[in-house]
Image 1 (tube, rainbow, N blue to C red):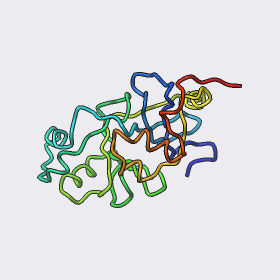
Image 2 (tube, helix red, strand yellow; image 1 turned 180 degrees about the horizontal axis):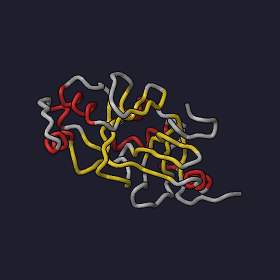
Image 3 (tube, rainbow, N blue to C red; image 1 turned 180 degrees about the vertical axis):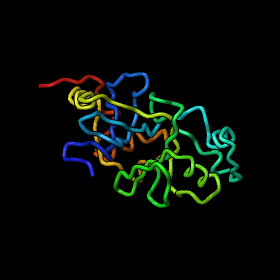
Length: 187
């Protein structure tokens, strides 16, 4: 369970002024956040892979064309060769972190094998790489108005089209990002 000041299980929504090549217009689910830093997964950036090509590379048979066609997302610039499956709870998978709110992040091969075979979690995202912040870095970025934070919801994670997640995440706060200036400041 996250502590009172933790942003774990929250979405980070890039403000229009965030011009970082990787994080501009991104939505990131914070998976861990404590005094040692933070770790999250970007939810709206395609990688160069679909699940079919990933399964082929891993020599995992998958005959379901709808599953094979699903996008593999780029979860962040750190360790882009490392895979993550963000999914709704259910099943017993090796190497899983239960986030709460019915979400789990698994990093083991068994969950991918189950997805390929058709008996894995029904609601899932596959991501390569992750996003990381050193101690105090995320707090400073929030103070600098680089991010908004909002509760994570299945509607944003699994239902919103990838290219609409940024606007949809801010919309659940009642914010239209198209109306925000990219200039920030403090009174």
